[in-house]
Length: 593
Image (cartoon, rainbow, N blue to C red):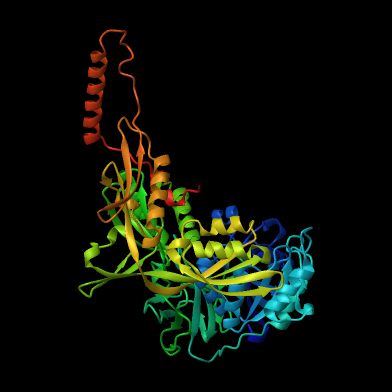
């Protein structure tokens, strides 16, 4: 295909602003998909995506319009997958920015615009859902003009649901987005912007060929991982796989390889063809994606441990961001500690394990990783509080901090700043986009893991939106809070926190545990401690039985004798009795008030 007739673009937006619906209308209007095969969210292939109404895995598709090949990449909108979005943007020359006409500019709209501007993309602003009664087109248009510095006439007002003005978006892509500028005669370089594992065909790569070409049966080489493979099949997606003899410079398509795992072909890596066409110069922007949320996954029954291990290994074949290691807990038995990109990523993996592999799981409270310096000069990277060495050996502990942005209507500024300060955060900047305020702040990641997003939605009546990125590690006065049930330490419940918050946290968790741990025939104590010092306690009273109920009259000493016997029995039971801790206790931090 002549490069002047190729347009590569992606759709970027906040969650639920209509990216996938716009992609559906585009495919309809370009007759890429037959009417009878059409269904909503066509590019969202996973059942979970359709159910939650979000895009989890990006999907490319090639459409034919006005003698041009339009290559669309439908990107995920959630902050957890921002690295995937940045690689997708690098595979394009243009971006369609979709903004909901009723909700306006949101936090991830801003984050994705910054990513697009970093890659020097041409941005086509689109106002979606203009047919809704709640749509406020003049206000949202002003927000978009303030954000992009464009003219009112550049903004296309559409309804992706009804298809109104979608043809204008397609015309704008052909006219405004520049053609790719790769060299067909240069050494071959192609960018991997996604990869997944197919049970029958092996690893399939989604690529953008920047220079040269990749043909069927070419020997290919990944520059970052050093892996070698064979291009068993190349082609484009429309949206089903359509084989081609070769992928030329400027084109977007897929390569079926004989690789066994996606770890050999990471997102952002550069592919070259071995031999005369080989290039040694990698494309910019590649980085290893590091997870920074960790949780322990344990099977409810230890017999299922092998099934859980096999299931996670299968999942990790197609999700290169998933990192895991084996874990053993005295209370929960054998399990696996998994690293995630964020809480949504964790939620999706948990649901997939439960649905696709039919597993019953106990998931411990999510935590982040900490950099620990020991007095011996050694440095440790710990993923859970139970791994922290004895306090006397620890010199200092550094925790990850994030840089965040919250977009809210002006009326909620005070409540949001209060929320940030309550999480040990620091407000850095406050600016305005028309009727909305943009609050920039820094905060420790661990404090935002459990329910920050829910609290933000609560204090802003659902109008607040939030975006963040990792900002590095800072040394803080951190302690490990341990929890004891009937005098026995439960290591899976241990939490790292700042010393100033430890007392309140200890009280809060013991209170929540009191609601979750069932009553026994003997009194159960729930305690929180830092080292050897107890800082909070709750007691669960024993079941009471009136052992003197059948006595009628007689001497009071008979009654006393029976009660003393019962007290001895309870004392013995307390010594040997074991408290059965239910699975809800391990996610007690996620419980709402």
